[in-house]
Length: 609
Ligand code: ZN
Ligand code: ZN
Image (cartoon, rainbow, N blue to C red; front, side):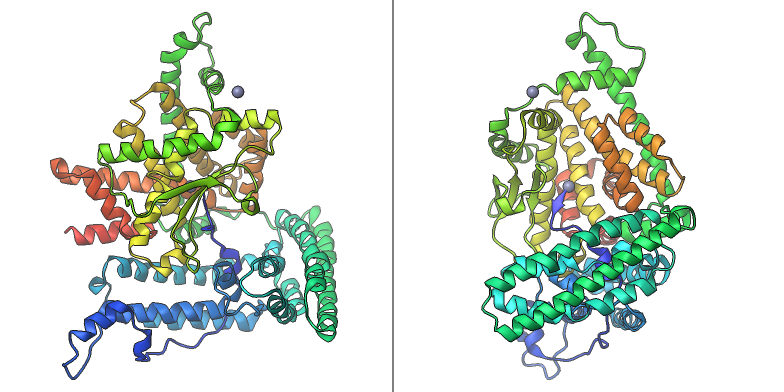
């Protein structure tokens, strides 16, 4: 996982509002430093012509501003507060405006010659293009606003404004007051839009909108009492809050009625089926594989992992269980050995320190094995997760947001202080001696942190906003295998066994998602797959099942990115023969930033031919 990069697609879906066509103004204040440099050398020529890159930089800047204007809530979540008081009503006019925006942006994009752009801009060009295709599809084909009532929930943005101190409390409350205005109209339109809800998403919407009430009934009034707003402002706010609460309650009553109606038939199936799944896969992941192809790859990968795990278990069995015969059920034997090995783990008090200790070791190894470039001027700071960010225990790299870029990249590790002895033991067994090393590879070196450092060498707002999740997660998963294959851990069988269990999780997520959404897999079969073939505990498996009913495609992104990067590397290696240089390959691959893998492939091949 990489925090703060989670995509908020559902927010965008119904809020791409109107912006005028991109104007070709020639305001020199909009030009980047690079442009100015280019121009100064041509200062004497009568006609100053911008380079393709300079023109494109200008286009991107204008595009982003219009995008934020059209998507004020998405902007808010990205740390751009200029339109924070706007709540877009997801009605027909909004849809029309969105379609116009897509069309006019496409026209403007077509004026650029991608082959004349540098790596960073060429990949940005394709990212914007793909993004527009994706929006169009969400608006005109997927239309989840008709069947997923949980798309409609206003609370998150209000909570964010209330809890983020980007301006004074009084100013934020005034923003909230303006933003409250559209809530009744918003929920009225929501009801009109929902024509064929699924039972699962209706249940989710009821649960989430009930939770939303607290923001308006408790949180905002509490802050209002602490503020120095005038009595008349406070009164006006109270009236608006009352209307908001009533609107949400009306929506809840309506949802409960809907739910009762569709419980005994008439609900839309939560499974989206093969046609929509393939399309969503193409838009969300951005890949050269089809979903069906990836599903087949995942099944093959599962077989290969099971075989490898069985072989390792057979070879290690006499060492750990000298008195016991090898069980008939091979997967049970694997599970038994994994359980046995998991007792080797760090003490709970030393969890954070152990992560700190491992980082320089990984760094030295990467340098010595000559795997890729690192940047000592951008060190990774390992720290205990700040209190306000602590949810579930774990570790994640904190990527600075596009508008709050800080010098430090933090590796947040949550200490196990709040755990009971049983919870801590279970957690430590999961992140045992071997898995903890793989976690550090994934999150930090050469996983997320290293990828981020490379991406930041050519900063791109486009990529930090529309960064491709499959590429980002795929790189981290790829880096685990690449490290082990290069000799990290000295090919220790125990490490490979634990790695295989870890890798099996992303493989089985892919199988599960496709099987549930396209092939109609039952809950019972899903739990069997997760618990008996991927060695997961029941709680984890139940959670996965629920996720597979409520979301589609996202669960496949890790395995897709990983497979696509690995296969691409193998193809380049084969083509180059003895001239293949792993370090050069990695550095070039990462130089395109968090772009979709097929775009990086295309641009790397274009450059090297
Ligand atoms: Zn990750
Ligand atoms: Zn223990």
